[in-house]
Length: 409
Image 1 (cartoon, rainbow, N blue to C red):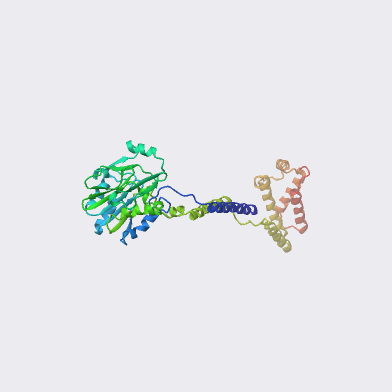
Image 2: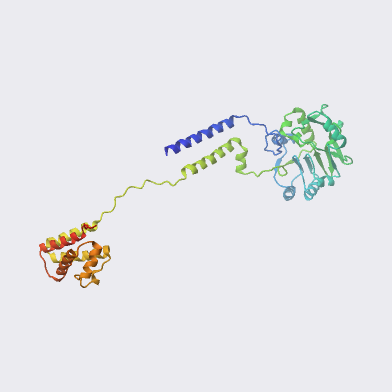
């Protein structure tokens, strides 16, 4: 038991040491995209969501976790006012029904902003818009020849506020498409250095749709850059001051908000959870053996039947009822022969016959003459009405001599 405790203490000390080493190490920066309002990593949207009340001058900001169909049906029942519906993700992909319902929503006078590196063909077809890859034709030659690690873009001349423009890193931000066929009700708001449209505004019915191919420009990392912050403000303030819906449904790798997910997303809680599981496994491993109190040693039970027989014999002896005691002793002797030698004397009416005595002699090793003397005396006891003390003692002597070990054995 002591060795087990020492081993458990050693294991616990090792895990505590590993936990301290791991927790003291600087956490590597997570550059994976995560456009949720709760993501605080560089390419998350925590800061943007926190800025929305200021951008829209204190208007109601709501986080939406439903798909477009369910959300619009619920809003229709509530009879909400005009809405700004904001979608930001690396890819926002609507099916035909969702795209149609969303544009019907815009046509009624609402506004929609979508920042995505690419768009569904259904939505582009309904808007009579095309997206082109920057890695085709002239754009491809430009993209492969330039050594700059940044992707540069700026607003068009009529709305330009910063001459130097804006930039996002090509290493952590995927830029693959730009808009084509910008005409009619469509406005080109911003473009890259080859004048490819990366931000467009489209009038649709009573409302407007704003599309941007640079979702990473709206993440925490670029919000902290003063020049890029201006791009975000200039873009979002093109929508009117009204209630804002922030989409949390159309997010890549969207995880369910469960207690376990919360624990695993928190570094300290995650390590505590793992240590608890390891501790439980060690407990089961070393303490799972069957444990019980020490069984006390019990002395073997005494054969009180002998003491009882002695007591009864003493009573008969003191009363002088020798014949009664002798008969009981004979009966006990017969039971002894039956139990040890499988010999029932009731089957032998002539117990003094030579055949019986020879058979018993072979089983017991006693001489025929000794046996003859014993059974003749037993016959005498069974047929007499009274005996004295000496006769009782003589009967007892013959029986005890018979029970004693034979010299031949």
